[in-house]
Amino acid sequence: MSYTLFDFLQLIGSLGIFIFGMKIFSEGLQKIAGHRLKSILGGMTRNRLTGVLTGFGTTAITQSSTTTTVMAVSFVNAGLLTFVQSTGVIMGANIGTTITAWMVALFGFKFQITPIAVAVIGVFFAFLFSSNSRLRNIAEAMVGFGILFIGLNFIKDAVPDINNNPAMFAFLDAFTDYGYLSLLLFVVVGAILTLLTQSSSAATAITLVMLFEGWISFPIAAAMILGENIGTTVTANIAALVGNVHAKRAARFHFFFNIVGVLWMMAIIFPMLSLMDTAVQYFTGNPVSVMDSTQEARANATLALSLFHTTFNVLNVVLLFAFVPYLIRFVEYIQPDRGGEDEEFHLRYISAGVMTSPGLSVAQAQKEIQQFAGVIEKMHESVNELLFDPDSNREKLMEKIQKYEDATDQLEVEISDYLVRVSEHTNLEHWMTERIRFMQTMINDMERIADIYYQVSKLSERMVETKSSWPEDASKEMAVMMTALQHSIVAMKNNVAKEPSAVSLKDAIVLEDKIDKLRDEYRNNHYGRLEAGDYAPRAGVIFIDMLNRLERIGDHVLNVNESASGRRLKAMRIDGLAQARKS
Image: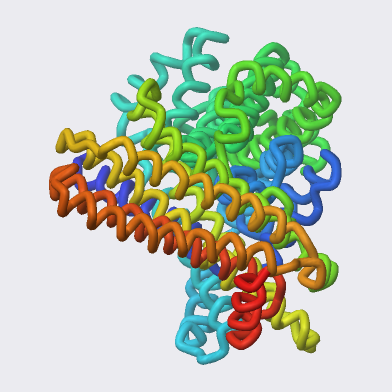
């Protein structure tokens, strides 16, 4: 009986059911864990050892090393984990992913689990529509568990039978007669298989089925497992493509850590396989070698392969643990930080772990807001250079300003999300609630300042595109306006670093009042120049538009200062303006 295209499509469909079940199972477990998952990952990485335990535990919960490593890379990108902290998590994830192989080997081949899987789906299916979210998440995980093993059974049934397809077996067998070179070839096959399935768990399951059905020998299956350890690193590296340099380093570390592991394992592969064979014979009490091709040997070969998978990853962590600092230096060498501080603006001080107290959390958020103010200051300097330095590289400056604007958008979202989580604490004192609200308004105003600076930069570009120009006195006025704004922003940056009680609004009000006066004066001068025909109407429109936008920045800066002081009272502001104008 020949193997047809329809049979092949059944195999692909079976694999799809398995991967779908794994996805549902993993997502259900993650939902059950909820926010605790991020707390575990971010809070238990004080050193590499706790990082390894954290990575193992998180992967055991998610049933996906890819999820753990991608999450670790994302946390590094957001500044919630350092690159060094992530290395322990990644090593632990490599060990945690071996649980799936044991689950498949024990439940999928040792006894008929399909009827149990169907029964599990029957029991929990109705709870998928429950109004209780926790019960619904448990049901989702259990239904995914059932689908996973149904898919595995379908894969076993869809794999071509050796006796009925001798030509296919002969084709595959032709690649297994080259000894050590065959093992190297199937390391590559394992990596490609993981790339195609985008799941090391699915690739491992396919390898176990091929071994169980006799399509490949135990040494070839072990080589494929090693290749799958390399292939699983690709997803995290893809995720890091859009990340900062630290995220890229975390992903590169994962790749090189696994590559080094595969290299040393391939050097001792045959003695290690013999050791696995002996261990399985001893613990199962079955004297049949897993190297044999009999049905009895193949049944134990799946256990030997799972043992090899776990042993390899545990030994790799143990042997390379002391050499991690050297591997970190190597990764830092090949992935240098070329951008310096301007490379990325993400959370630096907020911890992803369990917040010890709302007061400490607010202090951390205040540090992030100081960083936010620093970005605003850098943005002002870049816009000033764009406007008044004729020798500047305008294209690079525009790219930098765009990057600053994107950074402020990201910082606003991340800080706001953190403050919302802090405010969810029960029994917060009134002053703490008010402080959090003021911080929220502070970052909203600062993000708006960045938006306006970006708009001003676009107006400057329009000047160049239309070949417009201002007379010398107009340019001087705009320079004075930018200088006044710079003083105001420096004062704002100092104020957001202080406790509310230490913030004095007097100087801030004086600076903002000066900006208003300059705007009024220069607006009158502008209309005089227009009437005298000193510049074209197009240039005049850009001048007054830019002037008004800069004045609005001054308003937002004063709003930030008021929020920093914790006193946004209209009457106080009016009194302050009156007193400042008298002095």
